[in-house]
Image (cartoon, rainbow over all chains, first blue to last red; front, side, top):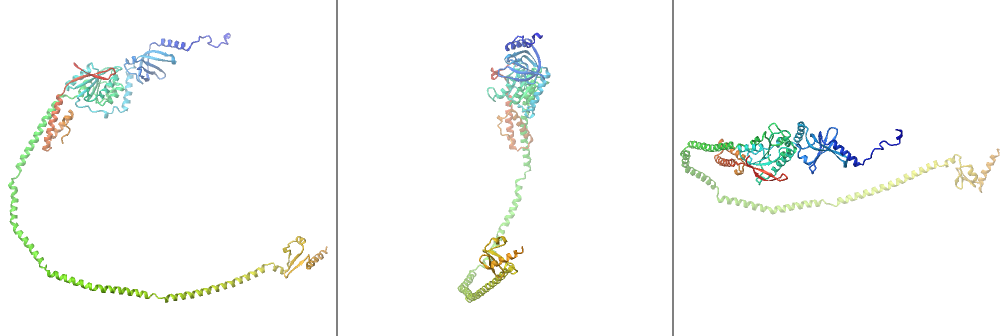
Length: 514
Length: 81
């Protein structure tokens, strides 16, 4: 061990290329797992156009990628669908180009009936959630369809049962759309047939049926499975033509039964639901016809009887007019005298009115009116001149009141007032002047009282030099001539002035004390 | 009071239903005479129409032939079923 210390472990293992190793893995995996059986739930499924199916098989921990080649897909009893628990058989293979391995499935079937039923329940919930089972969606079936479309296997007991029962009840035109009723092809073919019938045009070469029957005989749940496929249920739900489903026996319920417009327990029952019984209808029609005739004749009889009854009750025509005739006679007898009375009365009223209507009356009235008019006309001119004179007098009276004396009196009054005011103005001015003079004198006196001259009276003096007031001894020494002002006058000392010298002399005499 | 739709355009069921109604009205006896006559005539027409539909009961069974892509290609008569 010590001898090989320097060597890294595995140093002497053989070296592979990647392809060699991948090939070795492939051989080992494909050799070891050449035939396996595996149970798992189908995960993601994809259906590319190639026809192969890629899917994941999974359990709670692991996922296994798988492929079903196209040829195998068509043989499978059930269509691979997400969520379905299955048992798949096949082999493992690797995919060296991507370092992957996958299972190639050669057969796959549901892991027991329980798995299928669980998936069916999930589908039912989903479609029910979309409202496809809603009773309001169900359309009524036509009472007597002209053409019946049957989606089923063209051979076998089912189509035979349906045709027999139709023949018994009411022979009709039947179009059979052949489909596989089990296996992988079943669901797409059935869905296609339902859609195909719906695309036909009424009255065309292939006339559109008035009702559809989708039928299949009994079988195991796996056999019937195609009718549990979603595409079938959706096609049936989308069908515009009313659809009767009849799949399996009465106890078998498939997904299409929930979306069809009627569910028939058996194919025979579907035929019974599709058409009424012809003979019964004929009886019914005969019955209606008989009742129609009876009803009509009864209506006529009733009216005939009523007519006879009424005509018996009609009174004789003579009696109807007797009364009237009598009234006529009576009235016509009274007519001439009534007319005469009426004329007399009117004539009396006329003569009363005409009596007072004479030309003289009218003339008098005219004359009196004419006189009144003349009288009024005569009064018209004097009245007018009277009115004018009255207005003129009023005018003169007002004019007379307009006199100049009043104005001149007012003028002289105003002149006097003006002179008086002028006098008052000059007096006031004079008074004002005197007052001002007095106030000036008083102020002058006050000024004199407050001035320094009064201080001079009390023995003080003001020293000036060149008209400047000297306030200190130092200033006095430097100054040339001094002027001293007393209360009674000013003197000059120093310089040329004598009195000034005198004051200087008094100074040294005081200094002799020292 | 009577329906205006021409009888020939009625389906069997509609004609049958109307006939039933007409019979009922006529039996009731409340309809004026002129209308009764019109109802009777309509009823007779309806009956004739329904009768014709019932007599025209003919069985004819055909199977759709499909092309390679599963689309309907034609019809072939079916016998012996």
